[in-house]
Length: 193
Image 1 (tube, rainbow, N blue to C red):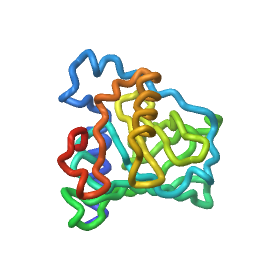
Image 2: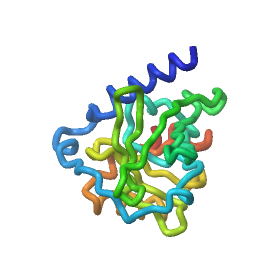
Image 3: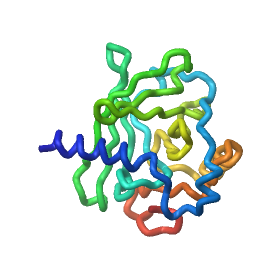
Image 4: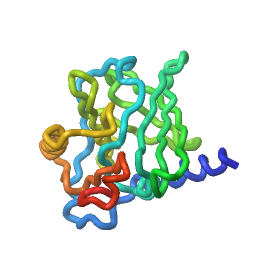
């Protein structure tokens, strides 16, 4: 049953993930650029848990709080890609999706093909990682979706503002991002989904 739900969720991600945010004005949607990869990354160092601080909301992740990505490098070079969180509240069990990603050769480990459900794949690009591997910006190759991730579940306002400025410099409209509650006190606060 859980495999069926995971497959259905993956299909839903595929079908809705590339769709434009219906709340965004058409001119805002039109100015979303393609995502450009940053400098090469150390894949071993990049693995592990990354908390979702902010994202372009879409149906598959919209109701989650406390969400995070967990990446594990496999012996065959592929990456176990798990998206986990609590749907509808912190009192709910941890659930999520499991995908397998492949690094695209020649991209300095910045570009991954993520298999949702055969034969559907999406291309996810790492646009920025800070030198300490504490913060990262990832986006779909077509620029429709963006994730701001951190190693810790909290991010100070100065760092968050810096990350938004980086997104703006890349051509994204930072106001399209919504923060993800990582503790119960953040639910319902302005800017949080």
